[in-house]
Image (cartoon, rainbow, N blue to C red; front, top):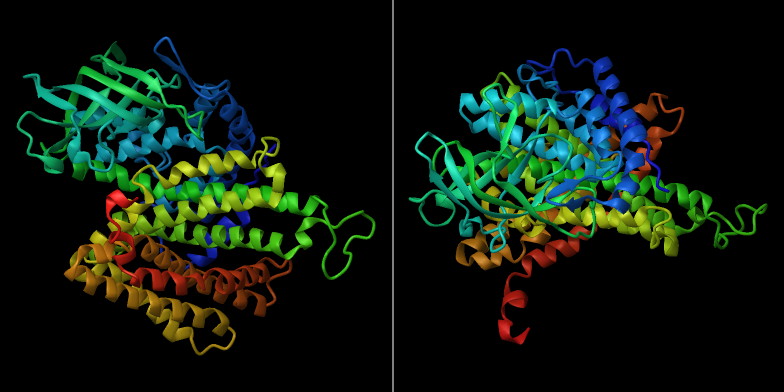
Length: 594
């Protein structure tokens, strides 16, 4: 059976030391260090005592469709009620709506803990948070008053309904129709697929945000509008009333996250209300989608962390063979497998990702807070630029590396990782979806190269390049940091060269740019991680020099960073070459030759 313990020591390190120079923002005054610590302790308790024990049973039982009603696994409804009573659904929601008003930074930390403990459960509040954000940003006051408080408290849940049988990424092909009813509402008719948490028995109402087209809609994505469609129509006093002709046609049979019901939803003249302006649905939905993409990135981190913890403990306990340098535990017939270099390589590859990614996820959370709350408009703009730039990187890099981490943890177990007993195979299955939903990782790479790099004449990119260049200039001559800063400088130079080449070639032939997009995103992710690891090492070395490392925590940071610089960052050499390889080897083969 898998285990999990929230990595509170490392989370506190990121919050209190890596981000120590971040000044308090307006509205966050009550979130003192003591309050933040209490929130994290409570999140850990909820995750470890309530949610993690339900993870494997939920996977084995799964959600099921019975006579048109979706049933979640045993104990899950009660866990959701406890989750709501603790105020966890409303962590990022405004206080005036019944939420906690927590900083995004703190919410990201809590989300990691939740995803590690039980990813399938975390889908429910995650989708509600996304629906809340879209309604709050784009709906009229009537819809806000009627729905935001119930989403913030978890009384009702939310979904996002985009995909249809004939279209996924190309949403301009949707066929769901919205016809005016003459009273300000619309009749919504169509079928949506792959709707996470589209139906369940947690709450008595579910709020669907549905993309559809009006009768006069232009072709393509320019003709998409967004509608709020409740499962049950609220009565005058806000209670769930009559059924709104939203039915579950089927549940998908999935590789992972089996306790989270993924539904085929049928809308048959269902009543809905416009969110945002006519034909402005994509702009509105991107509020929800960008929120979701960052959350999915955190899912990759969360599963990598829990996979690491289990593989680490197994490696310390499992005895097999002897160390190549001689027996390490003569009292036993074999040494624990953690003595073997390849097992250590596996463990350190996961650890160097999780600890670096935790710092990056926290940084993006802080940038989100700054983009919304900083009193200086220029600072808000700069923070928002970085969030936009880093969103596809966090989504794709975290989930690619997170899936790799679960597979690597499985490898530590050998054959025992392939069977159900230890639980690590579930992490592999659960992690796989994160590379696919909310826009496949290939789409994230296209977003980074095709939209984010040229946006505002390269302004978003400069927001990242300038501080990295400054850090290298200020620390490159420090002999204690040389083994970290110099590899960063070389990788950063490759990223700059690759960026310039993609821009130049893309102007002549778009396929030249997009053919290297996935490798470019991974190159970018490695450089961001190297930058953060270099900053972490600088902090750790100062603490060690001051005698403040009695338990070796900071020394382990330096050693983990060294592994990343020597064993992971060199991949940037190969990635640089593949980015520059261009389109030829991908596109010269005719389709019929495949």
